[in-house]
Length: 250
Image (cartoon, rainbow, N blue to C red; front, side, top):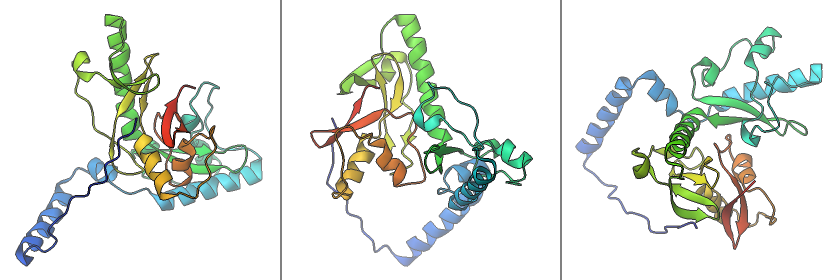
């Protein structure tokens, strides 16, 4: 179930000039005091890097007939499957430098290839959110092993539940959606697998794009991917059920 809130707060947009100046100074100083990794984490999507990597893989495929991607298995989730092999691009001379935003160079994104069999495209996976979901997964797995029960709360979709962090003696981490900037929650299914819930992001996209044709069996994650530079992190498949996105079992 998705709860939508339509109310919008109102702000006074006419502060005194001296207050505005003070905020500007404080903002500038705070930027200087941020650690480099914090600043990097808050950067917008590195579009130039995406264009450069896209050009490199396009040329590589055109000249070799293959894609410069790392090996994966059939069980690897769709949006974690084909990581760009920067080492291979470097050895073969298609790229001289790894993008600073790439995980391999200390950045906060993994560069992925999707639609590999049709028209390969570069998308980004947010490492910060990815690691937080992995942390929650380790907590849930440990809890199940020691207590023999699922740390589940309210059922949000059929077979998908909120996570009982209090029962695990943990604090829920803040997970932000790269699509909207909103805080999203983690879910756990009946098998103890942890997911990120992008239901609200998908619902907002559907509402803003009323003319988009959506089939009943369409994987709604594709709407987020096609409309941005990112892939959803550890997200379940969503279908449109009663005009709302609903997570479904694979």
